[in-house]
Length: 382
Image: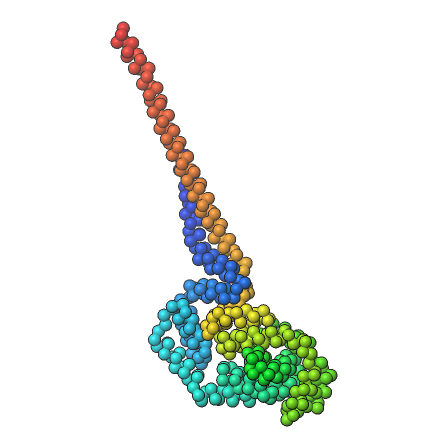
């Protein structure tokens, strides 16, 4: 066997081995993500692990950014994530986060945020949400929103059908909350969060379109216009009764399910995690997945959403590229195995041919000596 037939096989084996070594980390991460794409908890874990391997300082960088943005809740979420994954953080950084969280939870800050939520109806943390929900539980907030948007509808002005529908559902849920002594409070909070996110423009475009369609199906416009014309915030009971008659309760199921999932996120991961979810969600299925993530990760949920965005909830893009990484690694592995096989076969054949050639040479040498030995014996006898 000539050397020129063995060398290409050896070179191929080396090339495929190097290619596999380069492709394997990407293929491993891609396979983990693809395998977990139906489970938001496993999916977010796999994608975050990949992100951390690519950037070991990812968590510290995000904590610094959160502190710079005065977002103590997000910074604390990343600290919790670092502890869960045994990632060391500097004592100075931990102290700064602790001080910021203590300031955020101070009595004066909480009172100010509660008042803001109650009066304006904008929730950004637990305190402001408590104020907003308090306003809604006293039907002040929902009637305020229904009357405002209902008047816009009656006069032909731009009407936010989603806020209108959410406020209407809220009136029904508020009554149920009183009857159940708070048993549906998470749903009430979820409705308030969705409504607030819509008001401040933090509701994702896809989710806005879906929720808007669902809300429009609920409204009986002529009845609502009459209720608005005859109603008043100063007569909340009568106004609420008239307004409720303008809405088709049987059409509210989709919004109620959405609000329940939002409430679950807020209950398990915090108000800002719920608002972050509403910002990136494209539909109710995204919010349902976020609720599953929040139930598993708790306070770490915001950190996952910050790093991965909508990718924490589902495989939004790159599935083809991930498949190609896996496919490339498999091709490299197959090439490596084939090269080993070819190299082994050719080296074995070379060895066997050399062994056969040596045996043949010995036989020829023995045959060459045999006539001389016979002649020598004949002379001796003669």
